[in-house]
Length: 443
Ligand code: NAD
Image 1 (cartoon, rainbow, N blue to C red):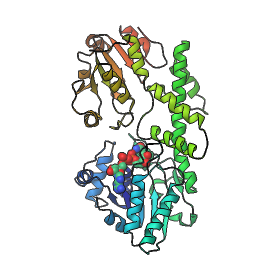
Image 2 (cartoon, protein in one colour):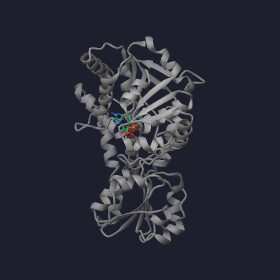
Image 3 (cartoon, rainbow, N blue to C red):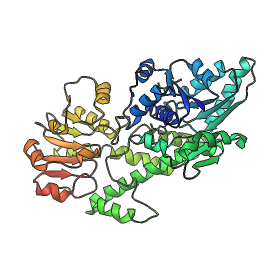
Image 4 (cartoon, helix red, strand yellow):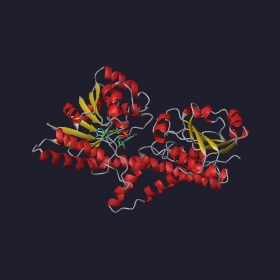
């Protein structure tokens, strides 16, 4: 099938590459010309395991193409995906400018009927608003084309986006006129080999499903962080509590790791947007408010521990930082807890020597050259002449540490661990101080 996708970010690009890989022909449109040039040369603008190889194979097979020309994209296919950003607006609600600019382009340039599929996470009612907007635009051109608008929220996870797209757990189709559902079965057939993954519903329910899913996951994280804060005060160990509750199949082990808070481009903005939606319909979302408040506090937790250890004076100290991305296997630093920590340390007069396996360019782009930031070439060089080590992201190669070397290198012999990577008893044995989250502090 021929498909056009607007937006070549984590969602649009991954979905495009996966559609091409299973044999569809895909035209990708993006307004960022530098990104399009990179893609046409076979380079992925984002780090996502396996993605660049898929782009290269499918460029060679001529099943994927990239352009900045919206008209070309609109002419190319009957099926048009919208996978552009929906960042937070000033009032906390989702800013739909990018989504509506694609809708406006379709209204301005389409010369035949289209199926418009919105993959961007958008508030309830957006599919209906897109439809109304496109139809108004067409009316101005004195055209009456059959435009169908469907909500198809995306559930891929950064860091395993290709895998998630190739083997989705479910595909939500929010369609108000279900007569056209067969086209989705065909489109997604290659991804539904062992059983039908399609869950069909109306567009408003599909839109709310995406926000409900992210809110549920964020709730689990804030819940375990609240328990961790209690565990610290009560002399209990959150790791034991995690295993104790995770073994209950109604609870499960996923998403109940205590840490320094959730970040990324989705949870923070989607919780905010759903709170905004609730306010618009006159509902006070107490639980969502608490989820966000707990997370906000948790992102300051590491700096609180540091301040406690250093009696509120870190000026002139150098902190080694392991991990900048908001989670492993991505270079994405949007809303990452690392940013809160770095900025708190700098405000307090400290220096940072940071290392991340993938996010160094992103850190350079965000912070530029500054005298209080050194971007180190390895986790070992980050700790050279540092006073203390702070761990922000649970990258696999941070899990094993040479404690003797850390003891020799860290001037103040202390580790602040935002991801509970080590056993406190092991760190104690090595003679280092250790501040985990929700576990016994070793001093
Ligand atoms: P992104 O910021 O990585 O990419 C968006 C892309 O859209 C950019 O390349 C931008 O240049 C392009 N763009 C903006 N306006 C455009 C226009 N008018 N025409 C063509 N291209 C345009 O965003 P993302 O992370 O891929 O997220 C996209 C949507 O999917 C968001 O609504 C997000 O909430 C949702 N989502 C993201 C994830 C994730 O893990 N990143 C997961 C599920 C859903």
